[in-house]
Length: 385
Image 1 (spheres, rainbow, N blue to C red):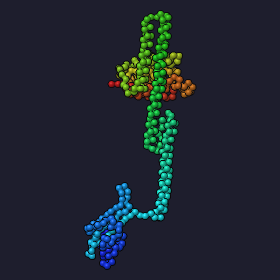
Image 2: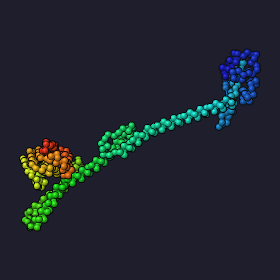
Image 3: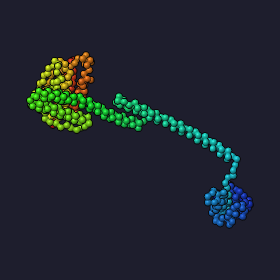
Image 4: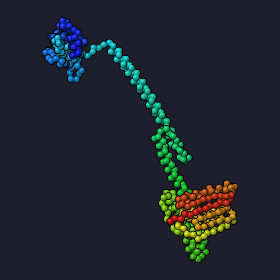
């Protein structure tokens, strides 16, 4: 308004200033009384000081103003000038409704396109995520003992791969527990067979002696053998339980006369040679060592029993030199092996499996080999300190 007043005083001559006129959007006059009525009614006394802007808005507390009136006095070299202006809301035009309709149509079109784009992206994303999940579900249902040993397939997402690995590990743990139970049952049935046979044969012998009324010393010897066999079954059960459920628990060790133990086990297995043209050669040297007795009996007993049981003719050689034990026996030919299947019917492979496992647990070195029709077994005992 000040700029308008200065321009007005420079452009409009003194004679032309008497009448009020509109200049640059403002009503300008040299007398306040010459301004339009809206200014005079809004400010009856007019602006008093120069360059002091006065404003009046026609509005209520909760509505926009209908009009705003501005008024100001500006002193120039040729006298004061009075300026006023009234601002009102723009009147409705015929252009605005059409523009508004076009704007609404454009907004609606853009909204539909955006919603469609988001829907398509969401569907593609859901499909991209659901396909690996469906693949994971199908893989989980197809798991078996063979697939548990295979690597986990790639399901495109780290989280799904981790979940698949957790599922495989969990099922592997369950399968290992089942395998341990099955191995325990096989081992127990295989190892307890010998002491049970001893008990049954000695019971029959005791019955015959009772009928003939033999000497009491013979009956006591039979009872002692039955007692040892029952204790052997107990120790075997405890060892197999330790082997399957508590592999980290150490077994109690004791000093053992190794040659005496070998000869005792060989004597217990002689019933396996009954009716066979088989001879035995047992060569030992004095040697004492500290070992867990029950696993030692199981390992050495298994090896001697396997040699006796699967030898049909010839000589079984058991040789002991300090902590090294060698067992050699003629084995069945491939034709006999294929026709009789001794590993399935007699538990030959199971005994060797148990021997290998126990040897690894207690730190013994065990090797088995076959040259032609001769089977060799070497055991190196690791004495406990």
